[in-house]
Image: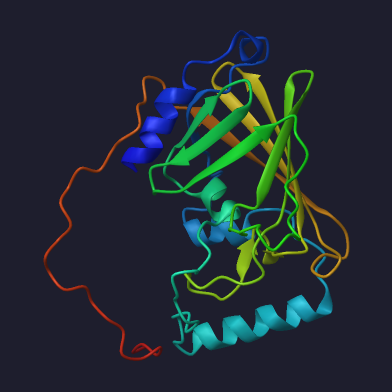
Length: 245
């Protein structure tokens, strides 16, 4: 997190070119319209997508396992385990810290996540052997008048650091190596940000899935750095993937 804050400080000196566009810099918190439950907000509080039959079947199998108490992802955790989860980060309750410069935009979250959006450049070659996929994909951005348009590809095929072995999108869709995301960021007032997400992947969705989130600016908000020393207490280890009901 300390390294991320140093990057934030470096990017905070915005260029004159960046200042010509709406100022998205600041801390923003997503607005839950009243679900009262994060899982419901994330998975069930958007227009339902049209999913491919194979995804519907996989969702039913996952839910059945979880209802039976199997709630731990048993995928092997290795040093190369992909990190990051873009759809979860954008829906999570910790504020987003957005820092805009001419060439790139950093979105950091107090949950220790962060993504970069590279402005006005082509995507990296996500098929190249040197490309390292993450749960944030490869994001490029451009301005369309008062709207920031972000295009993301190059997600990971599977994940191993969350409850489920797949990266879910709101509405029980998927983000994976064949998925394409377009986000549109627009200020609807000085302190309110609308972000529209459109997910496309013919292996997941019958038709593109679009929904929007509203974020409110945290006035006077500043990022928090965790300076606590690691605990010396042993961490709890799971010995089974079934919990008592």
